[in-house]
Amino acid sequence: MKPGLLGSDWFEALGQRMGDEAESFRRLGYVETRFVVRVLPEGENEDGTGTCTGLAFDGYTLTEAKPLPEPWSFDPDFVICGRESAWSRMLDEIERNGRPELRHTLNSLVLLGDELWLESKDQLREDKFYRYNQSLQEFFNLAVGSH
Image (cartoon, rainbow, N blue to C red; front, side, top):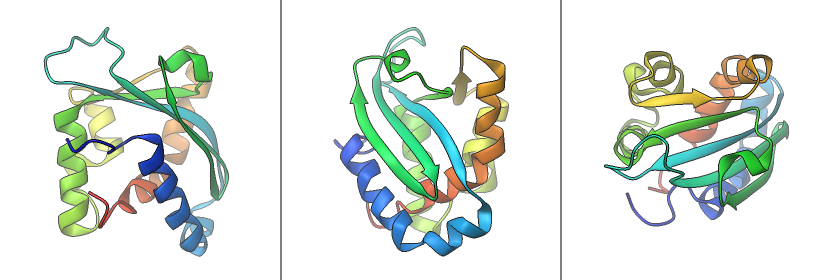
């Protein structure tokens, strides 16, 4: 994976694009969540910290993107975890097609749980992933041209 991908600067750039596409996000509905993207290097066990970036959304805007030493310091609703290869595959498909194949969307990958998985300390807060997953996928789909 290229350095900087899935880092706070990369997410801030997507947040700017989100502002440019505000009407599309309004059609999907508001998003009120804070979560962490945790990228594990290949070979690191699932207990490892990897690289963590905290993201907060308020309405139709990314309000915060920051690197974290570990995921729970951000008080996230949920943490989306996965190895570099799973994240890279999704981003490669977005680059090629404007969106990932159905089998490689955030929702599909998390539901299967073998390549991406959720961690949370509160089931009700974890449910925000499922409530907002279409908006979150569209946010990631803004990565066209940035990978």
